Image (tube, rainbow, N blue to C red; front, side, top):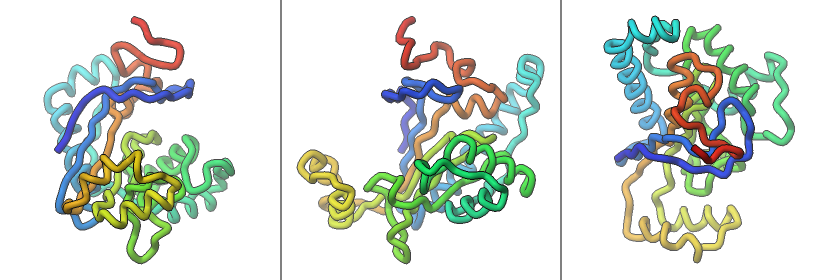
Length: 236
């Protein structure tokens, strides 16, 4: 199941990669074993998309943007968050204290440079994020309940997608919501989807404007959309 549509965020960031309205691709797939199944699907999807664009528009893209599209090989490299932190520490990169358990844009660029140097690849998954920086509905590892079966996809030093295996077990989902400080009444409509059973599933949300930035080597997201929407721009 998938959808492509507008996404709205009250995002106060004035950066080269943020917008308050963008086009997103959301995908969910059922009967998975772990989030690794979602990664495998995403690998194939992006490899196909890059190859299809190259087959049809290769000459025009080279002429207009001066970019020679490189179709990525699969599988994409995968690092756990713990491995990512160890690599960044060894490289001398210090994450801001407030981003504990997370990555900042500089950290994303640094780990992308490492992957490019060591593996010659422009894509890397950062998987197995701590529960402190993930939503309550992300499934946790059975052997380490402090870690979620989740991921971010970094492309060319830019986060373009976030995903996870979702928790589908009703009682577990309720317990995780309460542990996160949420009352059950406001989200009961959501919990009811799982009350009578739901298959193991997972998916991702991908920003297509950011993917366009990476594909065409565009440095500012404002140049990858027809009409930019930001904190100070609603019209036209």
